[in-house]
Image: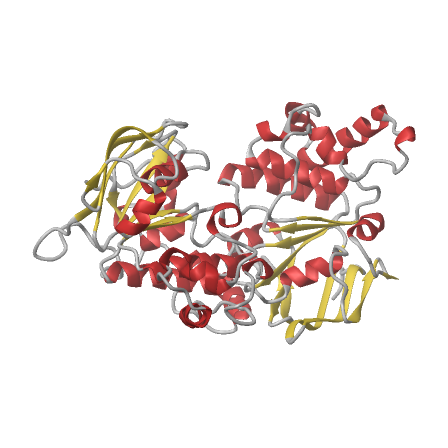
Length: 520
């Protein structure tokens, strides 16, 4: 094509197998300097393995890599960094107790400590931080600030600065960089990505948020089952076409585009049916001990109650108080007829289950098997491994979890498949009240559609669901009623059909949109 330049990175016939599992199957990719190139695919499509090969973490079985036309075969992350390839993982690897400068230069210090030049290291850290965050924001962050005192978006910028601190960085790999960021933080990150692109860097961008991909990326490569199934211009390719390419099948519902269902399509009012549905969870001015969460709501059987709000608004803290993970400081809390606080064990016994937004820290036992994780909250007095694996195998099939079998350790799975295991445990527990905190974070568009169908099925079966999500289209598509939390205070709930993504966002930032619905 006229005007196209030579590829900075070329991948040819790349292959990698882990035992009988083929992760990469003759995969090809070309990406240019001075561009943002998105790598798309379902969980298990081969994205993580490809990035591991590029970053020097994984050795391929066959194939070739070229970096600016020169053979590239890193044997370790240090080799990759020396060649100018750096990766920022979805799970940040910063040291909270160290300063910004120390984190940026961690692993970049000279090997002979006697020759360490503190002034030179700080100068390199300052240069990298300015490249990652911009001059004004770099000054605001400060080299001596402890990372534990930074907001999530600021930590993301420090991690990028750490990647750029290597001399001659040519390729920056960003793995799901916006999964834990609010919308304002995403805009800041995108501004910095554009600045890096303008300076000639190649940014490989991995994300499940297709609308974000179309906004920030120049081109894309789609993977499926370890193979390249398509490539093209990100902005000129319709989102529905991307979805079909990634999933390998047309989806009857596309979550990222769903918006509000048509009349009769899913939203229900509290007055549906001859009698109001019973209340299973009631909060009256409920507040947590550590953050000023103040919430009043009623959750009814068979209802999906959505909670919107910015990151840090108190949504997660509310769910933690209800489930007993955090103490109840004040207010009245009634769950399935029981008033007052209770421990998580008591809540589970009552028939309440919670999906944590922190799947690795709180949601899963990574060293244990899929079967152990799925059945953990509902173990019989006498445990038989074969019986637990058979129970888990049903959910492996239903949730389309990509794995060897139910005995495989959860830590071996991709992030999206780990999320499916966490959801499978809730379904296995057969809870009456389900608390979902970011249930579709980090999973692909096909899996997201499956999760949405499961939520609808649970509600149709009479389960009560309290749903927290950053995805406003998800809330509009699923929520029978939705309320917005702002600075720890939960606003009044309205029917889901009375909200749009714009009105939810406007209320979340404290500026109700002109003409926003006012449904009683």
